[in-house]
Length: 163
Image (tube, rainbow, N blue to C red):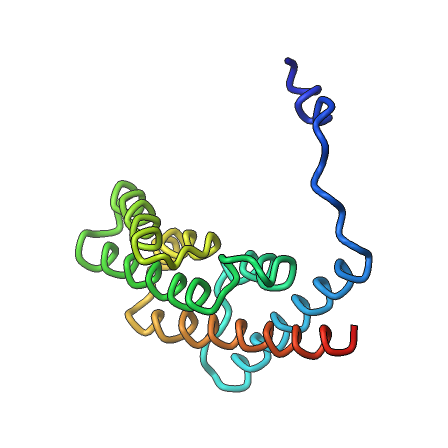
């Protein structure tokens, strides 16, 4: 089968398209949440945004009931992956192979603790690219992930009650 046919889906059915209202609410919620976390970070003087939070918004607002979108997965998943990334960076060194093992270790740790949040798997890569200090675990990781999760659930409560 050619690549073009695979891209066309070759007769397999696509996932059901969400309602336009769901798409609009996911767009609005993710936009507002990232804006709020960014503004809070700017006014507090603490970094609260992490590159992987954009992908977290896909899950939190697009698939809020999914396992990967639950509090333990979002908050612990992000914290665990950042901690592992920081440990490998600081104790093993900023080598490409150390980064690779950090990502694999982060995945294994999330699987073992049942805290898988796929966007958090990129945290070790972000850490190796930016080489932050230990404070990165608190700001932006824990504070940002917690704030993003709280805003997502608040938005869900508000929109599900009225919609």
